[in-house]
Image 1 (cartoon, rainbow, N blue to C red):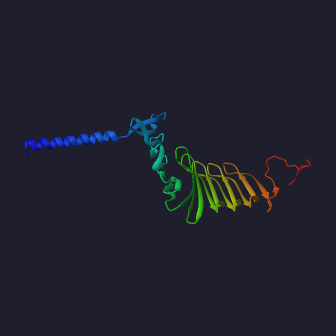
Image 2: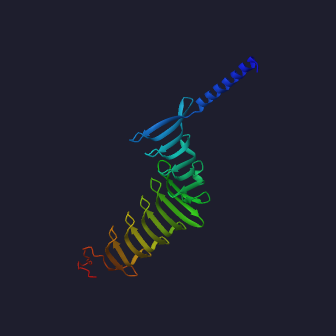
Image 3: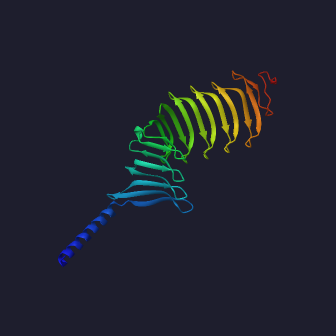
Amino acid sequence: MTKKHLTNSISKIIAIFLSVLIFTSCSRNNKEVISYYENGNPKLVYYTKMDKNIKYKVAEKMYYENGKLQYEGDFKNNERTGKWTYYFENGVVFSKCDFTNSKSGFDWEVYKMDKTKIVGSKDKINQVSFYPDGALAAIKIESKGKEKEYKFFTTYRVLEEREYKGNILNGQTLSFYENGNINSKNYFKDGMQDSVYLLYYENGTTQIKGNYKLDSKIGKWEYFKADGTPDGEEIYGQEGSLLKPRDTGLKYYDKNGNEIKF
């Protein structure tokens, strides 16, 4: 290679490098930390760009206090757009959604903490509600012929699972504590409580155990303390009348003021 050719080649390389540098500088988004945690870690981060001296937000990221990513996604015209991903604090994906098509209810994936998928792309989305940051607050779906609704804590853990039929509560309803333990378990038939009812303490021990029939308490209802020891019982007739009250020291009176003896 002649000296002239070598000089020309070097000039072309420099020109290409400068062009790439200029393009990168023009297209690079500016990172702005909007808020911090007390430990100094970033909490909310915006990515912006300038267009005709006007600043636009093009992306956003939220972090947990431990530095793990909580969610990330893009903006267009100051509105969420494209695919957004939300994460549990341990880094496991909670949900993926496409805000471009969110009104039509397509392209949703939702997972529990144990990575179990509870909403997939083949499920029909009937209703969706959001928290202010755009994360799911509740979603109602039809999956494999069943109608289900999931409600979530702000930490993305499941708050409640409900089964429906014809938009009326039918089947099992579960509610949870934020630590993942079951809060209550009961069943509905055509919108009325029916069958077993269970209420639990946050530590997992049973607090109340009984049965419903068409929204009325029936049979024996048992009560327990947090350590599992019995704490009284009630007995109801099949039509829902109270046959034996729980011994709480309270007295019962009829409309004439006479004490009712059970």
